[in-house]
Length: 125
View 1 (cartoon, rainbow, N blue to C red):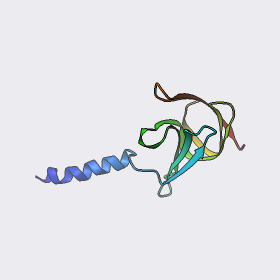
View 2: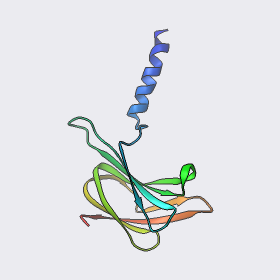
View 3: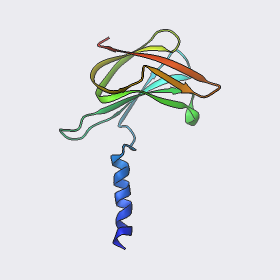
View 4: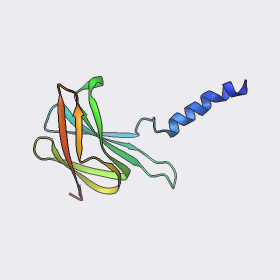
């Protein structure tokens, strides 16, 4: 009987530890195209040994039907700005942090509304 009472607590703890929480801070970066934008989503660390963790996502479309793909993530990342060059080509400017995951080509969208983004990283631009 005790196991039935403890199970919801264990499950809730596993969800929190697995990263299912919402980010503490979200910043939107618009692109030259109306239906394409980026979000910088940061989860703030708590305590001396826990750093902030930031993810940069590309979004295509609006509302609940918008497609979302990871561009990069890492510890203490500081995305200072994004330079949009040609159609689907961008430079992500970082002013600090450590990159864990980086995709230099991001395919986003469905059969009717599809884009391929080409991403470069630059420091201190």
